[in-house]
Length: 472
Image 1 (spheres, helix red, strand yellow):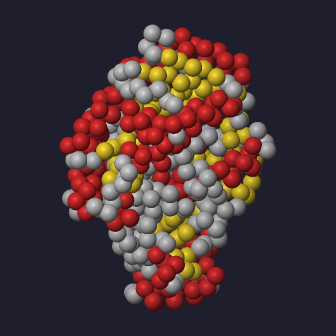
Image 2: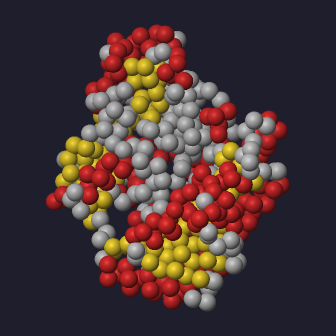
Image 3: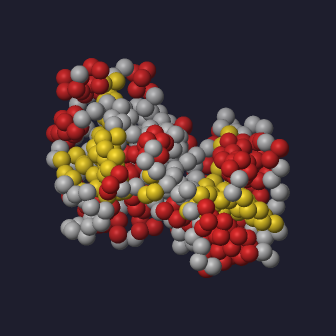
C-alpha cells in the first residue's frame, strides 16, 4: 500500500484535523535527538493524532490488516531513533492526548493519558503535596507515555528507581487491535501479585508490543527538605569508593552525580563565573526528606567524605544549591566549548557500568575517544553507574563523521565487557539493537517469541529494541 493510499485512509478513519499528510510537515517527524537521525531522513507515510482509545483501535486494526508499520511517538526527545519510522509507515503522535483524568489523593495515584508532559503533571501534583518521582532531564518536554515506553530514569533514579517502579497499571491497545488493562481492570491497589506482571513487560518495551493509551501511576509525598553537597577529588579513582562509603554508612542520597575533568573544563569555559575546581572529579550529592533528616544526613556524608575528598561543601540554602547544580545542568551544552568548530552529538551517550568500575570506565572512554581521533566529554549518574558521553566533532567534516560509528561501537562494547549495559536510561531504539545478543544472550530468543505472540505481523515499531532474526 502506497503513501497516498495510507494518508487517504487515515483521513477517512479519523478526519482531516487528526492527520498530517503533506510532505513538508512529515519531515518534522523524520528525526529525534540522535545522530543517526541527523545523518538520515526517515520520513513516515502519515502522522496521526489520536485523542481516544477508539482512534487508536481504528488505526491499529488498519495497520495490522494492511501490514503497515505503526510507530507510537511522544515528544521525540529520545536519542536512539526509537520513535522514528525507519521503515516508513504511520507515526502515532500522542502529544495532543494530554488529559490528567484523576488525581486520587486518598490512594496516592494518578490516572493520565500518554501525552501529558512530565513537568505539567508534577505542577498539578504539587497542589496536593505529591510528586511523580521519576526525574528525566527532559522533564519540560517528555511525555508520560514516552517515559513508560522507554523506562526513563533521571537524576533521582538512585533513590527512587526508574519509571517502571512507579507504574501501577496501564491500558494498552495490542497490535491486533484488542484493548487490555494491566495491573487489574478496576484496581486502585498500590500492590498486587495477581497474575503475570504485564505492566513491567510493557515498561521499557519501546512500543514494540502495543500502544499505551492510559496510565495509572504511583505517587509519593513531596519531600519537605533538600540539601546538597559538592565534593572535589584530585584523583578520579577515589570517587566510586567515596560513593560506596556513603552507602555503607546507611545513607541513600536522592542524587549522586559526577563531573570528570573533561566536563569540568567545558563548564568553566562556558561559564567562567562558576569557577569549578579543575580537578579530576567532582561529586554532587542531594539528600531529601524532612528538614531534620536532611541536616543529619548531610552532616554524616561530610564526615564520611573527610579524608577522601580534597574539599566538601554542604548547604541547604536554595540559592547556593541552584548555583551548585548549574554546573551539572550546563554540561550538555558546554561540551562544545572544547572545540571552536565542535558540535556535541547524541551517540553512545548512555552506557552503564558497575559503580566500582566507574572511574575505570571514564578513563577507558577517554582512551577510546583518543584512539578514534575524537574528544569525548563525560558526566553522569555515578550513584547507579550510568555514564553520559558527549562526543564533540565537526559535523561538516566527512572524515570525522566517518569515525563516529567506530567510536560508538567501541564504547558500547566496552560497557558489555565491563559487566555493564549499553544503556542505563535512554533506551535501545535502532542504534543499540545490534548489541542485544551480546548483552542478553539466549534471553533474546524469548524476547522475540514474546514480540511474535503479541505482534505476529511485526507492525509495531519494527526494527527497534532487538533484531527479529539473529544477526539481521
